[in-house]
Image (cartoon, rainbow, N blue to C red; front, top):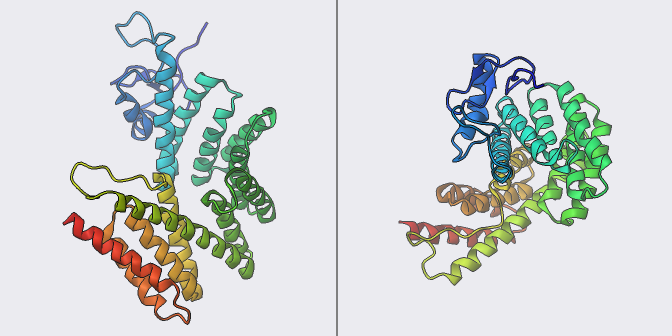
Length: 351
C-alpha cells in the first residue's frame, strides 16, 4: 500500500501542500514549494498537457498509457533544458530542482538503470559541485559510472562526458593529477566520437590547461590554450563561410518575414564559445601574447556576427584589426577585414 505523498523537491518529508495550479506536485513546506516553482514547476504547469502522471482533482483517472510517454518526454525535455540553462548562467542552486525533475521523469520512462539517466546524473553532479556539495556530487557521479559499467553499448561520447565530470570533481577536491587523468580520457574519447578538430574535444583541453595553470606549468598550459583557441577559431571561420555562402544564394538575406539561416552552432555551443573565448582573452592579454589575442578577438567578432549582434561584432572586430596591424606578420588582416566588410554590409541591410 502506498504511503503518503512525499515532497516534490526533497522527497524526504510528507507533503501536505499541493501546487495551487496543477494540484499534482506536493511539498513539505512553503519554502520548498517556492524553490521548485522558481526553478521548474512554473514551467511544467505551463505545458499544454498534464506534466505528471496521476489524476487531477475531479478526474476519474490519470493519463492513458498512450498519453503518458509523450507527456513525460515533454516534461523531461523542459526540465533538463531548464537545468542546463541555469548552469550556463552560473545558477547551480536553481538548476537542482529542474535536474531532479528530469531524473525522475527519465527513470519513469526508461528505468533506473538506463543509459538515458547518465546525462541527468552528470547534470546533478555539476549543479552539486556548483553549490559546494561535493559529497552529493560524488553520489551522482558514482550512479552515472555504475550505469555505464553495467552497459555493453555505451558510446564514446557519453563515456567522455563521464570522465569530464570525474575530472572536474577531482579538480574541485584538489586532486589535480587524478583530474588530469580523467580529462585526458575525456579528450581521447571525444576525439574517437567527434574527430580531432572538433570543439567537443576543445573542452577537455581547456579544463586540462586550467589545471596545468594551477600547477604553474605555464608552457603546457599555454600549448593547450593555443589548441583551444585554434579549434574555436577554425570552427567559427567555417560557420562564417557557411553564412556567406547562404547570403550569396539569397537575393534579400534580411528581408522581413524570412528566417535566419542555421549556422551549425547550438545556443549552448554559442554560450560555451563566449565563456571559453572570454577566458582565453584574459589569459592572452595578461601574458601579453598579441598574436593569440588577435585570434581570440577575431573569433569573438565572428561569434557576435553569427549571433547578429552587429554593433558588438564591429567593436571587437575593429580591436582585432587594429592589433593585427601591429604584428610583424599581418596575414590575419585580410581575413579580419573581410569580416568587417560583411558586418558593415549586413548593417546596411538591417537599416
